Length: 448
Ligand code: S3P
Image 1: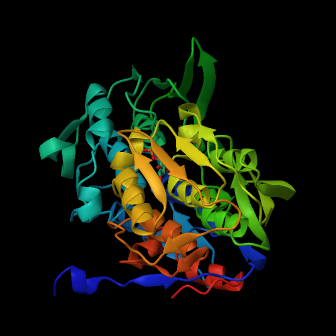
Image 2: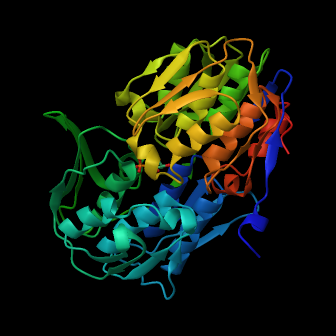
């Protein structure tokens, strides 16, 4: 069968006011890290609220293939029996990460520092993404890694001793930082990552929760995260964790509620983290009515329920320096901008070219196909909105290029467009937000 006939399209049409409550599934970044660290720890960890998306399940499968015992219990809690320090074994088959960039990059770091060898493969989208950003710093630490042309998958990492190092990555990337720290777990000595721009700190927070000796400082304009291994490789101890809800998934019902007239919804269990809440800050500046209740702590992170009400949004210049704090949220922001009064200019978007798809190109093409005025440059996007009485034509078919967030974003555009908006493939939504269709239906949006 051809790839085209395997696609499963979906369409969304104009919705009446969205109302009610929806609970967000577990955060994808935290879910990957919880499985990885629990697999390395001594003892049994219990993980509640794990995201059961395909990306995270691929990481679970990889950790099993290296010796961890991971199973889901009837009560929905995942139990992980870790292998203990330096207890990972080389997998007998290639580790297949499907669409999961975070999974593959973090586990590459882990394998490099674990004295084992493994081959890494993935789907067409993952196989086109750059891995050199992770392999180069790992090589600086002594890793032996081979990649296909252009630093792409398949990648093979061979057993080699790593040395302490202080590394300044070229790109602002939590995946790169995390791969270096995970490689550092197997080193006798310190490993430091010096970030020019701080990226999401979930790895360092969770490493500390599992008992690793981590310090975080800001010096001379750098955000420095150091893993100290004063007595040989790090020893992690099993923990019980509650995974907070994913703000990157919350982005879609949030922009739907802000743009569909009359909406008033509550999104429960959303993680609030300074390096993840850029979209909320930007939408509020655009006039979005988003309030927070029941703020609480959950496994080292802050969580709240968000009340989101329909708002007359206005355009905004979104500065480049906020981009790392909302790097996955630009598809959602571009859709909100299409309903705003005036122009929204988004800068600092070079990284969007190497996400699950070339997101800048996919957003530009999808918006144009639905009658929205848009312009894109090498690292920026400018969307001119229709104002509070939306007159977005819709009627377009959007190519998603194996990208879950492009699919969800454009289905949200359909909720405010005159004609239905279609996406060529809904299948990838299961990588990060399997409950998307159910949650949107709970709020009153029919997407099929
Ligand atoms: C992630 C980091 C981000 C983000 C990705 C998840 C993580 O990638 O886009 O979806 O969990 O560390 P980069 O670190 O490459 O920016």
